Length: 117
Length: 111
Image (cartoon, rainbow over all chains, first blue to last red; front, side, top):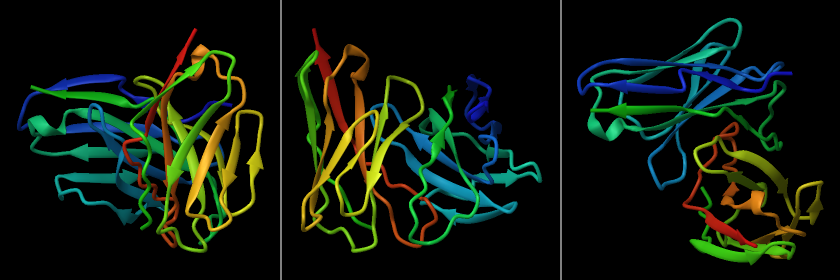
């Protein structure tokens, strides 16, 4: 059973460009979350997708947008890249049947290392 | 959302127990405590979680104080492969698995 997969592994972009990162959730999972992890810091929550809609969002500007497809895979798009967007971007998936107050762990992918020059 | 406080780094001798503390004094009654670890440049890996009772699995044990204001992750026999950053996270209620990661504790297991 494949876990969470992300592509590409590494990416180099120039300031001002746009980038799209991709994530396939673990088999049987329907919820996808995206995190940004700057060097030496913990992951920061960007947003979460469920039933093809953005359900939760962290403190990130509108330059960060996403999409979830009917097969539950997801994309993270970042427009007008800044040098400060250089980071490891992590995707995490969660199983269905999620209910408030219950305790489901998230499964993380290996991440996409984005470098903005 | 409850915040957590962890020491920035700890050392442990290989084969000995590693005890990683976490303070979460503002935790709410329905919030769970999760532990994840992240080996260099990889995605975080789930270790264990609990609400109020102590928990044990094949990786670790989680001890939560009776007032739930702190917890300790115990790796019973640390190996070099356990060298990683360990994150203690309190799951925000009604936030559908949105996790707030702090800075974590860098555990250095030494031979």
